[in-house]
Image 1: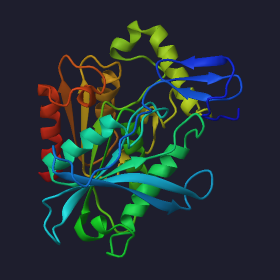
Image 2: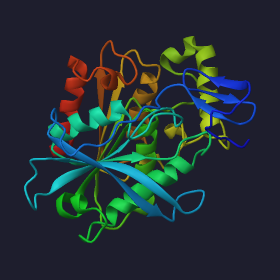
Image 3: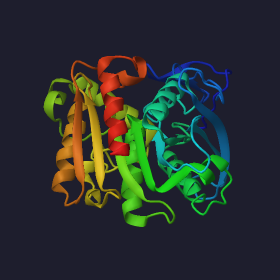
Image 4: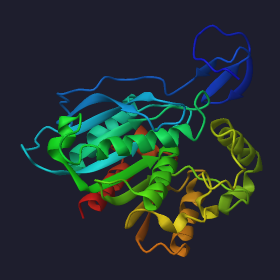
Length: 326
């Protein structure tokens, strides 16, 4: 099907609520996660400056493309001061949201200020117009672009002057956490010259599987719907035990390319059992690093984006900051 995003469409033929509709003429109508905000060199709340960058990629699926990201730097950073690098992948089921949306811009401003890091918020291409593995390829290209600054001669001065390339952390929430995990696996297998992968942060990761675990046994209808979303994002999937969505089925799980991982789950999140299961699977995989589970009681999926000032969101940010700077 030839997808487009114009307003010229006829009747909807498929609905994936609350995210999007697909119309008979191939138009994709996103119902949420479409707002964007500009970067700011003078954010008064966080004292963090941000700007958008573009870079050429010859490795992304679908041919040569120009990719975009938003980069963040604390304003109080001294000349020549080196900071850990946080590479962040946004969520949205691979279908909605962007690195430029209000919720991600606000979250990165706050996290960068508290952790005192330089951050790159990656804007990968989304399904269904650009089905997986395109988002994975775009996300890897972002890591390669960051690494191109390791010698100090890259296209972005903030990275040239302030990035500690021996201390690169990869993070994401929901589908972004799925991407972050895939980056860690690929880094463990291939590596990228010039950067040291120090740690992985997975927030409410979007993982799944054929056999229900925990509370999933009570939600058969929801399970069917969840798999339909996955097939929309990845039409070439081998099924619900595809290693791309079920890391426990991946023979390469023990090759995570970092030495420490923290996994955050929310008690009332429909994906929480998968996050716990991931921790168990990693521990059994032969991987030699340290993995820690962080659970927020009485919270829903990506609650930290909706209410960043709540007690559990503050506690989770504090843990991430400790993880990066510990």
